[in-house]
View 1: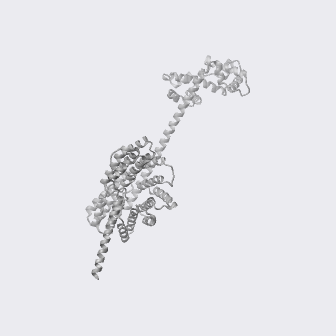
View 2: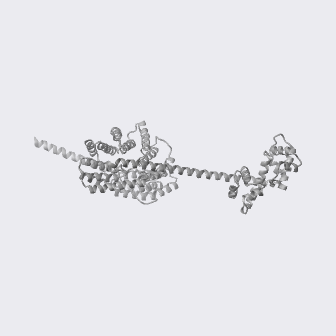
Length: 578
């Protein structure tokens, strides 16, 4: 009986191993994209949009390949092929080379943008702007990332129901998140999450990313209870609704974060359970970022289990993981911090101090380079409160400084723009006045000049008033009486053998102006004539004012601006441009 039971158990065990091997092989076969001679031959047959779609899908597949050499080889082939066959596809290739193959070549994104604009590829331009934002986010240059993201947003209609627009808003939240601006990031993430909650679309990766990010923000703020709530909600919905091919990848990440919250609450057994659940998932479907997260949590669990040697090995695995695996929530600085704690627990104080020093140096470098002072954490509990206070002060100062600089830049830009527009409007006034004068000069004959200047009579067609105005114009032109700085209405009336009341009435009715304005207009015409003939090249404005009959420069300036719309100095400087 025992023999039969043992044989049966061996058979069951053997069958289980065979099934496990077959399952693993099946997953390995279909999880990794293949690219052979047949695929290459088929790809060469495609043209136009169909070719572009195939290239885009292959690039998506390359991101899932675990082998860096295979990724590089396939990406290189597609790069050369797209360069030969299709400009729009090559825009995609240029972007992919910069973003996913760790290529240090400068100018790839600029080349992609130039090509996209040259062929009027709107989608290509959008891809470049979005990629630039992601590139600068990865470089921790948050201001540049936001600049290019806003460029992309301006190109895209604001439609919260469209995934393309949600990508933009999501990335904006990520920029805030990685910059440590958690209030702004939380607001954006919750707005996006509400869109998926409204439609009940839980078979999509984004709502889980949003909930996980909200949980991570809570963790960063030491709010373990809120973090646990977000991760549990994410897990419950994913286990119930998520059936996409990234199901296990998502579940593994969520449980890794739940293990982290359990450790934060000193629940080692709960953390061990979550890590055991992850171990039961097909490991080959986990992408690089999730794999690194798992290695990190495994190291943390081992540390809490006081298995310090194994924890150090896991940290080394984490360090050696593929550098192109993408962003994780764990930094090299945090690795040094954990190593310091491990060595301290092993009473290897020299090593603990060494890694503590590395940790602090990195923290200070991050704060200096990013100008945000987000993370400067000291292991010593005694200095922790003081350090947090300094971090808060520095962060507040830097944020205030950045906001002040941004506001100042905006004000400066507005002032420059306003000044430029004002300058152009003034030049237009100069041009308009000169055009009016040139048109007036083109009218031949004194009577024609008068007839064009005289308005329709207010009180009927008064021939006597018109005749008086003709005489007035003749007096002014023949004798240049307006140049006399002491000329008055009585003097002119006497010269015309009329009375001042009647002359004033005629000027008002026929020319729609007053006597002082009429005289000033003639003087300004004379001033413009002198300016355009080069008089001011060897004379001052005071001399110009006296030459035209004004008793002071201030009176001349006021009259000149009233007639032409600009001051004399501006007219002198810009009349040739007009």
